Length: 192
View 1 (cartoon, rainbow, N blue to C red):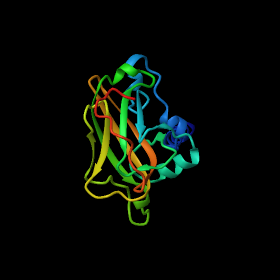
View 2 (cartoon, one colour):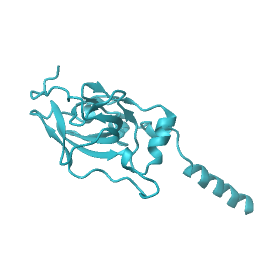
View 3 (cartoon, helix red, strand yellow):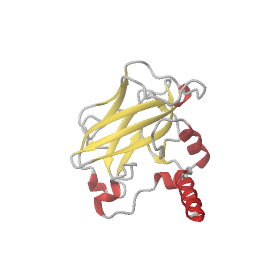
């Protein structure tokens, strides 16, 4: 009885241990479109100010970002700073491109990591009044609009991309710089 209880306790502790970034961000092993249902961004292509998002594989950076309580699995990054008025282009793609279909809408949650103070805050809330607005055709570019100007610094921005078939999301670690100009608008949706 004692060995069974000890075994159960050890399994419980192991289940609660923090995951590596590779484990946290891995797609599931399902077949067909079910491979996309964990919605970690593996079934879409996303570019921010002309830079394609890349997997966040740096364990130290991931550990630092996930130590801030914001309830997001941050699996993607942009290496170079982007504009505070950034433009996004989303396409069906990744490991099961037909999952999304034609893009209809993009929504956003913006988290300013520099605003988190663990002595004061129990968790980091997203910034109110931020939204993505289509420049024209939903398959073209979308621009980030915010009620208040965003400051320079490190952010996690969660992009939820809704298509005619389904939806996916990418939580992206990036640096915003108000001195940078956003990418050019694509109002037609035919790409470049």
